[in-house]
Amino acid sequence: MKKWIYILTLCLLPSMVGFSQDDDGGQDNGKIADKMRQYIQKNLGLSKSEAQKFSPVFFKYLKDFTITHRQNKGDRLILQQKIIELRLRYRGEFKQIMDEQRANRVFQYEDKFRQEVIRIIKENRRDRVPPRRNKSIIIRD
Image 1: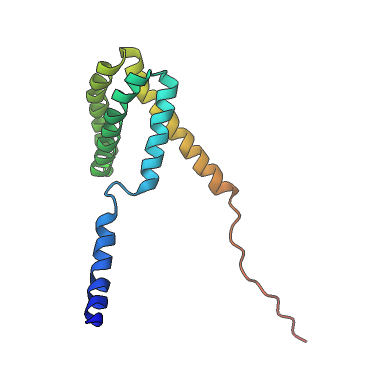
Image 2: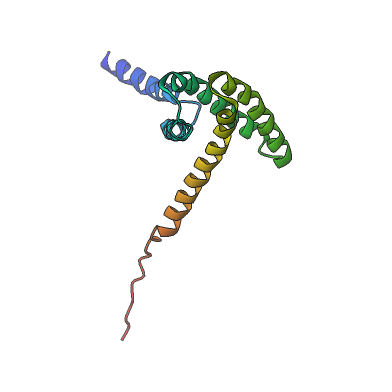
């Protein structure tokens, strides 16, 4: 009987792990998105009530942005057009939460945040020490 329980556990465990993973790419993307949201809210100077209304709309925008990017990454011009259409649509939703000037600046701060993250990643890659190869010196007489 114990053998059957072990076999059943071994068969079901991988499937449970597969279901527990997010389709959005994991927790790292969620952390970055949350940092981006905090950065934008801070720079826009949103009140608490505005921030509470802004967060779900912004996360929905990021999800749509990711889907749009995945679907159109083969053609750069179409991708740019789709992103512009997406931003125009969400600008209207952001206008319902805040004034028009701050709604327009959401995308400017988003771009600044992305550029800063890319700069940090490049800097970390440049500063990383390449792995050492084991080059042993063989001395022959």
